[in-house]
Amino acid sequence: MVSLFPTFAREGSGQADIDLKISNSLQDPNITGTIKLANNTLVLRATRFPFEEVNGLLQFRGKTIQTDRLTASTEGGWIELSGSLTHRAFNFESAHLTGNAH
Image 1 (tube, rainbow, N blue to C red):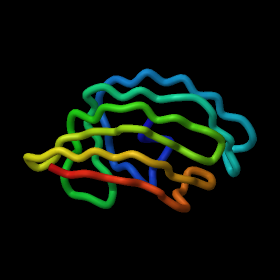
Image 2 (cartoon, rainbow, N blue to C red; image 1 turned 90 degrees about the horizontal axis):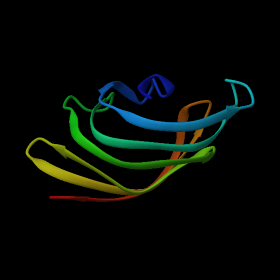
Image 3 (cartoon, one colour; image 1 turned 180 degrees about the horizontal axis):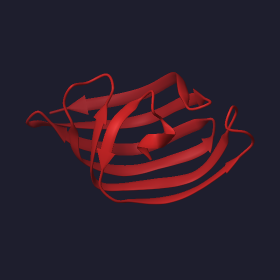
Image 4 (cartoon, rainbow, N blue to C red; image 1 turned 90 degrees about the vertical axis):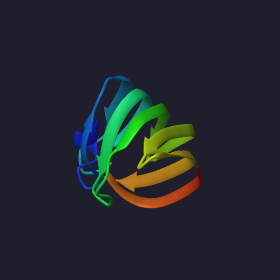
């Protein structure tokens, strides 16, 4: 999954249930389906620390990626996100996210 968004994610590990259909060209992909994450680790390019125990369901609808609840532990705490991101050719354009940290 990390290889789909190289400008966003640096590395990741763990298992994921992936059910995606990609149509159109790689320059303008249309993605539908889901990715279910369970106890994954993800390092984003914008951070220097890993997000661990990443759990949640990502729903792909064309150019939108949505989640009702994505959780992760990081630096001794927990974060929870919900909302959506839009992308063009796997580069993020906008985000409408709500988050909690504890």
